[in-house]
Each structure stands twice: as structure tokens, then as C-alpha cells.
Length: 231
Image 1 (spheres, rainbow, N blue to C red):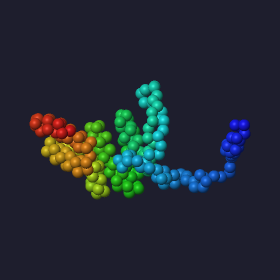
Image 2 (image 1 turned 45 degrees about the horizontal axis):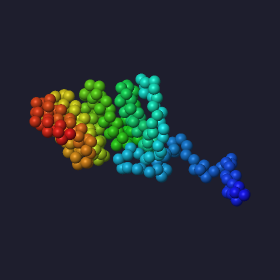
Image 3 (image 1 turned 30 degrees about the vertical axis):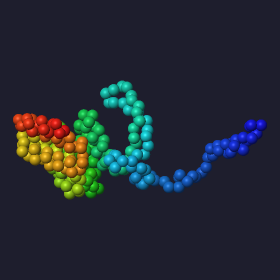
Image 4 (image 1 turned 45 degrees about the vertical axis):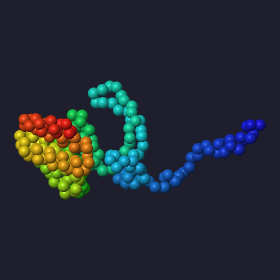
């Protein structure tokens, strides 16, 4: 009796079996090749400072280049545009962090070339700044200064204040490495002012720490302690 009463529901379930069709609404709009752009979809950008729109949360299986063991973790899958220059720049940063310097440099230079071809001044400035940082870490100070100063000019031209402050801090580190203490101090304070103006507390702390190190090397211990305490 109970089964008979539920027959209308069971009948509906039986009609829900999958069917193979020749076309479907999800196939009415097709993007291929260069037309593929997730930015066209109404994907939510959950927080203004997020790297991009949150597509989904996925299980990511990773293994380090020098480790046999694997790791499984949940990571946010976020869109960062379909720009080849952006992708190359991100990949180069990853390789630089892994110590794969030659690969990183080649990818930065490819990203720089593409940015210039596309006339993307903002991206050009970002890549130049990253190249400057890479060359500074490798002791190529002259090349690092040339690239960092070019990046600074572009950031000022495009109004990218946070990137301007970060590049000023890098130039100050170059000044410090070359023994130009007054120039380093001036650039650090300029970077600090930008960080505070932008309410970028993380960058403010980084610059204050750098100022502390500079004053400590210069024998200005009271000033160094003040900066370190603030950092």
C-alpha cells in the first residue's frame, strides 16, 4: 500500500534518467582559441584585494621539485586574466623563488616583450620591477638600477602608487648596496610615505625594517631601534 501511494513520485524519478541529445542550451555560445575569456562570465570577486575572481575551490595535488612525497590541499582557483604576459610574469616569479634563475629571467624578458608589443604600460612596469629585483639578488646592480628606475618612471606615469613605493624601496636597497646612504635614506622615506598614504601596513613594516637595517649599518643605533620598534 505504501509503495502504491508513492508511485507518482517514483514515476517522476524514472523519467529523470539521462538522455543523449544532439544540442543543449549550454552549447549555444562557444568560445575557442583566443576568444576564451573567463572574465566574460559573472564570476564573483569576493574581496577588493584578492588576486582575482574566485572561480571555485579545488583539490590541488603538488610535489616539490626535490621531494618525492606529494601533498593534497584545497586552494582557491582564481582568474588572473587571459594575458600571456601576466601568465609569464607569474611563472617567472615562481621560478625565481625556486632558484631557477635563468628560466625566470627568460620568462620575465618574454613577458616584457609582449607587454611592450601590446602597449600595456602597467604590465611593463611590473615586469621591469621584477627583473630589477631578480638582477639585484644576483648582484647585477647596474642592470637592476636601470630596470628599477625605468619601472619607477612607468609607475608614476600610470599612477600605480603602491608599485611606485615598492620600487622606490628596491632602489633604496640598491643605493644601500652601493654605499649611497643618504640616497637610500631618502628613497626609503619616500617609500614609507607612500605606504602610509595607501594604508599598506605590510609594506610600511617592510620599509621600516629596511630603514632600521640602514641606520644600524650607519651606526645610528637610536634611529635604528626606533624604526625596528615601529616595524
